[in-house]
Length: 203
Length: 264
Image 1 (cartoon, one colour):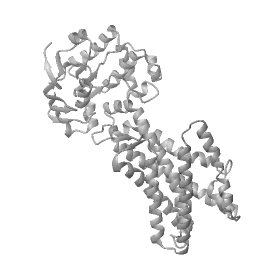
Image 2 (cartoon, rainbow over the protein chains, first blue to last red):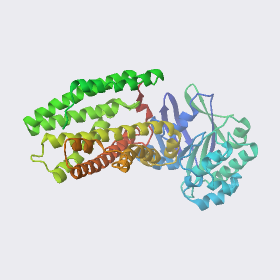
Image 3 (cartoon, chains in turn red, yellow):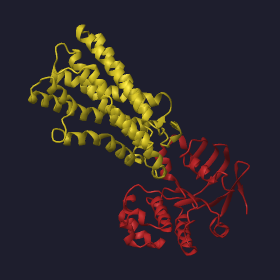
Image 4 (cartoon, each protein chain N blue to C red):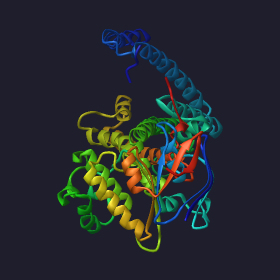
């Protein structure tokens, strides 16, 4: 369980929020309200104050890289640092086995990153973050508009894979989306930012 | 050695007019900096000449070391003055100055003790010019390395943050940026070693030849200087770039680019 006891990041605050493995929580709020900032705060990517714990263990007791391997933020615009797609992955066989689930052709693995379309880049970036997920150690994903560049068919593919991992108790998801249908279909719980604070709400 | 008269030297400075005209005509924006730099150069070289004259007459470890320290402080200042994006506060000065101090002391000390072996070791005729050559080149390497580091961190910010988000450590996340910064800082000496002797005769050898030295001896000195510059630049630039990464990230492995300020 991921527990946000209290968190303050540039004036956005949150108190007493939790996510369990298997949970899928949507995060909404008007543009510029700090949705991305809040997620980056949880992942400790931006300077913030507060207390967050993972299965009872405080964030400050873990090294930042170890924390982020368990609590992983995936930004809205994928960035790359190597020439080819496959060079961003540890395990090439794993990638080859799984990319069909996102309707990505195997030959794209060797392609230069610059040749990816926005939708392909978004799906590869999601796979890159999901790599290394195993049974026994749940991971928490903070997804900033994870399917914004995808058509509805591929949105469903992404949701299906995430749903399967959530059902197996391997992951939990907090995601930002502006698509009401997706929120209704995919999320079980809802968080909303207003008055510079994150609230748990029912829709 | 043929002595140059002051009148002849003044005539030589007319060559600056060419540079100034080009700069004015195409609005390159180097006219005023050129004027200031030329005046600075003449004043600084004259000062150095007087200092050396004094040091030659009254050799003392104290005065030599003092001259060395003053040169290093200026080198540190020059590094920061050349940065468009500076690391804030004392860190900015500290990184440049400590890197150049460390690199130049080690390399020059090594050359004085092991290769040149002047008697006494603080003999200004050897210590100051050797140090000056190393300082000048190391300063350029560090300055280029830091500029590339800060520029690429700005440009590659998303990629670095993505790596951090995926659980890479700060030095892993900055790996490509560091490689790029080091390459840009170090390639200069590689290029000048490749062309030395074939395309140009480097400054030190030129000076020794004109002063009547044996060409073989002059070549040996020049090679030694090149080795010193290669070592000094590598030491100083690496140290500075890693300190830069250290300062522009924090112990929670976050990027802290707000510690950079932009010079207008």
